[in-house]
Image (cartoon, rainbow over all chains, first blue to last red):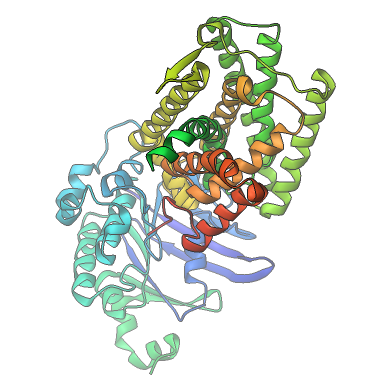
Length: 235
Length: 295
């Protein structure tokens, strides 16, 4: 499983207003990179631009050398990028199993199967006949992660996976993502919960005003609390 | 109550027949609007094309059941191709808001209606039912046109087929998911453009088939496209987007309002359909049986 992901000078926005102002970042194969920043600095716009929901106005996005910037969303997904979006966005009218089945790519031997995701998240197996809108927030988050895994991604984008979840459920989600990290999946993680971000990430990036302003190992970032508070605008 | 039923049940069965014809219009409208967020005002023209296919193929007098089935298949093909063509035409305006979509598809509808008028004239063209169903059937001692019962049966079979397709197949699951959240479906590697073309084509084919089925009941004439389009839109609003059951329930309800309601309250005939829609919007703004969006 590879997943060298490189973003260079990426610019994007909405209806004439610029949100991303030259983003540069890399996620190495098997690496988990945490992207932090205050609300409104462009983290979710970056995720949306990577998957093609927002069209970039300039810059480059490559996965294992393949240029993805400007491609339609379904081709970016087929190239190996899967997203667990902010707010989960599971399909309300479909059952858990229905949500998962439509994510399975056609043909070929696969590392991830329905059985494997049910093994990883037994709660989903118990709720397989329930509709998406009958699940708790934690169950929806697990479903969104399982759905992304069935795409056999080389890079997984996780946008605020702990948002709106009880602490015990956040721990479960962290445990699942840690398991994926151990299996060598490349992950770009946007997270407001610093404990979760630190627990999962090899490196920490900080975003301000549409640009990456800090890039270090997690240990290095945590070693200077004052700098961290200044970058994140807390305390 | 029994006396009331005895006096009105024939009108109610007429309402069911009209309801299933409206279903053939409303299902395509509902899915196209739900999946692609495209308001297709040319959908009524597809129904009218089907009605004129029936006029062209069967117009010379009583026709056999085989000829009727042939007209149905021809209309299905023409409607399907026209639907696919509309899908391609509306792609450039898919993200430009409903006003642009409405203007484009309304323009297409007007052109199609004018072409049909030029080809078939402005008179009402009536079609006889197929000879096998030309007579009447006794219902509780009253004679009732057999063809209308056949239309009800065929319409309900179409509804069951559509339900199975949408609720029990992978394609149906993709359609439902796209109604809920099309960008998220694309992020799962699905080319929703092809899905939309398929839904447009199926909706167009169904509407044109409805035109053939309905020709012996509603005839074919300039303006019929507008009438069925408006009723179809009302059905979609009442039933909810992207739901086969919603389209059927909405269509059967409006079928009753258009027949039983008008029969019982003739003074208020012109207000009943929209009054019903307004009432449903007040009680359930997303429609009676909307499928729901992303959770």
